[in-house]
Length: 240
Ligand code: 6PG
Image 1 (cartoon, protein in one colour):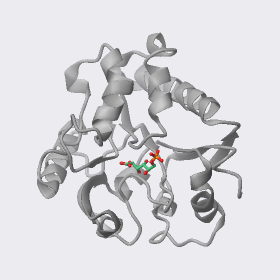
Image 2 (cartoon, rainbow, N blue to C red):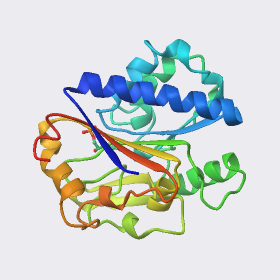
Image 3 (cartoon, helix red, strand yellow):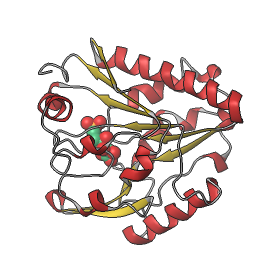
Image 4 (tube, rainbow, N blue to C red):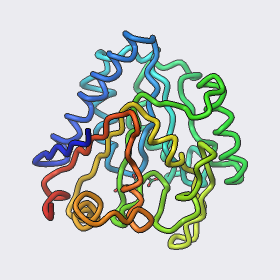
């Protein structure tokens, strides 16, 4: 069931998201000794990641957590724009994590090659499952309603037979690598984090407007057997 939880500010939203991560990690580690989570990029999740590496550092059995990414810019992992770098600085560097638990998208590779390589990493981790089933997928949303690197009217929106794809984004004249819609929708839990006044128009369109997912790709996200939650702050929810 989709639920939208509204918080007064980014700080309380991040705190709630961190608590949800801790809760889901405990349930999954207890059930199967592993918690497979997809991290979101951009800037919104940073505060949540910082809380996980500080306030909640002792509350998670990090050795059982495996980190993946929902998308990556076509840059090396030490580039200021790298989603991997953001999560590493905000969280991963502060955790006692086995290196083999961290699976960044190889953004330094040529985009199609990076997508093939990541698909191979997913196949190996998920024992050749046709569609990997993540325990938690964290997502942000752009002002245009994109999520991960599923941008409006781009080719990645049509991909249904690959878990990962390279995606050229004409508006930014850049390549991205992104998980595809079927993989995100196969997740057991999907959690959007959306904050700030700049997202208010897109959030109203996505949550309350007509179904037009090629224009607002976040509308494609509808886990078939999982739970979808939106954590939004007052500023982003101002038009709901
Ligand atoms: C990226 C993200 C992207 C992000 C949104 C929101 O690589 O940029 O994956 O989907 O979540 O663009 O970004 P902000 O959190 O910075 O607003």
